[in-house]
Image (cartoon, rainbow, N blue to C red):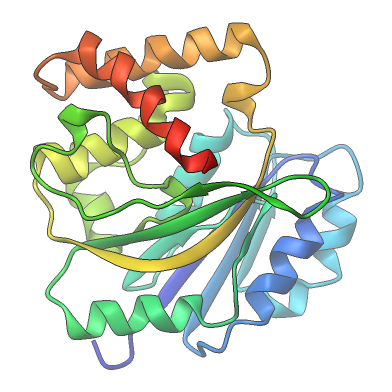
Amino acid sequence: MQDLKISLITVSFNAESTISYCIESILRQKYPNLEYIIIDGGSTDGTVRVIEKYKHHLSLFISEPDKGIYDAMNKGITLATGDVVGLLNADDFFADDTVLNAIADAFKKNDIDALYGDLNYINKAGRVIRKWRAGEFTSKSFNLGWMPPHPTLYCKRSLFEKLGLYSLNYGTAADYELMLRYLYINKLKSYYIKKVMINMKTGGKSNKNLNNRVKGLFFDLKAMRTNGILLPVLTLIIKPLRKIMQYF
């Protein structure tokens, strides 16, 4: 994997205020063998106009209606041609300009199928308000409410062909279900990069209101039961409690 090709996919919808910051963080990366794909869901604000300014830096850009964020991710993954695939949402950005180099080095030096790292939550003022430090994965981790930060997950592209894409049957927990399926059920060889890879702006869809949070818990429980978590109700209680330490 000397010339490891990384496919990076950004999905967007009405992200005019954040998309340029996301793209600029990618353009600052020092890694040369990058395929950058943007899948837009048919934005009705100025998102497409902003993206068009960067079109000469893009490998592929599509703007058309879709069935939501995970459908857009699936579309991008299906079109990707890299050895490794990662996702960077339109309101997220790389923590520094060495992230893709660190990812490539980890895949080159280790016999792994996937990797993940750490993430910071950033408020509107640009201040870090929450630190998600993933830690090492073990066979018991998911049963104890653990999960890695999804925006830091990078997988070999062949895994999506073998194990499937994001299921649209799990709502906002589609990323959690995929990680359960990949790491817990299929026991993929993973690697933890002890490094802040991503800065994520607060205000995600699953946490916008109480109704969304309740739906999110329902979908989490469904994903746990589907993928054989030993005590799903207990794990559902533990999972949000683990987040408390991220504020300190």
